[in-house]
Amino acid sequence: MAQVQLALSTTPEGPDRDNLLSLQSDIQELISLTKESLQSAEGKDTSDNEDDGLSDDSQDDNDDADRLAKEYAMFK
Image 1 (cartoon, rainbow, N blue to C red):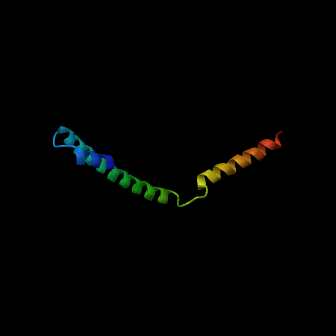
Image 2: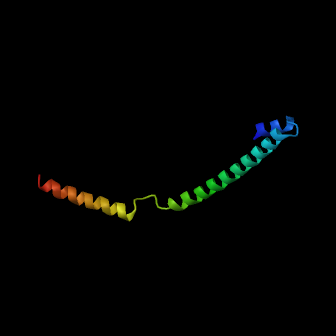
Image 3: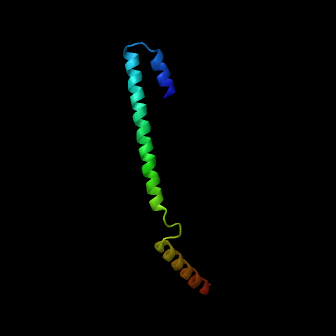
């Protein structure tokens, strides 16, 4: 952004300056959208990570696997 502003300060009126102004506007919009996206993602991550333990479904899967492993061991 600083480079665009520097170029704008030294570029005379004309199509090059218009392109730089457009670029500056696009960069500002991109920065704004990126900040909004990051804030939204941070909010989502916070709500998604409320429970750091295993979910009930994955715990049930582990219990089933343990039971099957024990049963398989009996037949060896």
